Length: 423
Ligand code: AMP
Ligand code: GLY
Image 1 (tube, rainbow, N blue to C red):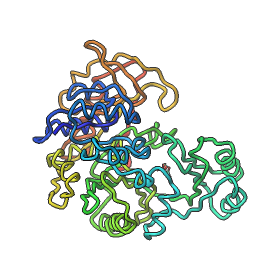
Image 2: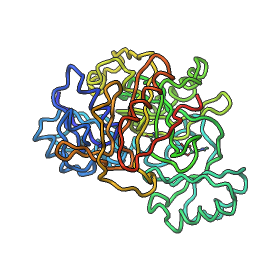
Image 3: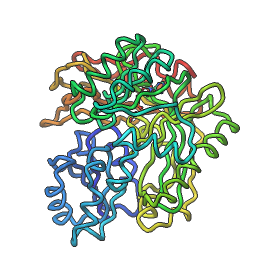
Image 4: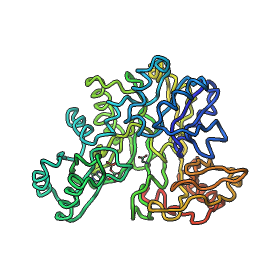
């Protein structure tokens, strides 16, 4: 099978790496990919949202399956585009249709879905510019901090957590009337703040049955001790040591099963990954958000723990035979640490030469914002390289990731020194 992976981050390099070991995968194409993916497959210089260019490449390269990394093309309807095209129709797309992708594409849609299906989540209400006054009244009923979420996709920046009531009201107006996040904030979901520890749960489904992949935890803030600005994720670990059997059962009974049942009952034919962002409040799991894709950098710790042939898993989704797969999970601990550009998540420079990547032999190096020119590799984004290690204990894995990470360098390189500090 020839496969096309859409995306160009660490998640997509990890997909590429895992699929390159598959017995049933022949050629791998990645659009647009990065310096890492170009060593395992063929990078195609096209945007994940350029559906016509994707069609051309699919035909030219005899692609037999498309694996979608990021949410954008899904929310924009890539799956529907394939279904409605005579030539593309038989080619499976791993990722949900536009309607199902609303679980990530609209916070209001996701909250209503949870409400209808009795899935535990923070108390909420949704407002638009005609109901701003009601929004202010709703804020009066909540305790600080106040959580304001742009309804639509806002490149991971659409959630504001504000301590001051007056400021929360001002921000609400900025979002609804001032279009702070463009059309994404034409509606705003206001939520009760939940205090707890977050973790990520991943399912893969063929629309009928599903597999629960290993849990992971990512570290979103730029600074040590979970401080400073939010990033795409500075590191991740799997398994999550604070999750015991009884908590896992609660996730299964209160969240996973009602989610899958809800999708079926509402005739949302979902094919692909479901990423459930959870928060553990006292001893109960609540859903913070749904994403319609794998996490980045969670993929870089989840995939190394899966022993199955990943091509076979994807193939079983396409043929609706995932119930036949027995997932084999490595008991070992995986850790990943991102090296990022100086200044990230604010403004940063690209084009810095990355030195000594070849010296890393004992860990996996997953590329994100990298590009190769001649025999050198240069930075090409905020998050640059994720170093993943798999060892018997968390300590061994994290120590190895740090030891290997310290071998590489580029001007301005930054990384968090405390991934897993709270475990
Ligand atoms: P989201 O995009 O919905 O995942 O929100 C981004 C981040 O904001 C989450 O990862 C949480 O850290 C935080 N967050 C979102 N909603 C809540 C909530 N209701 N209570 C506390 N923190 C939240
Ligand atoms: N690591 C969080 C995400 O992928 O959204």
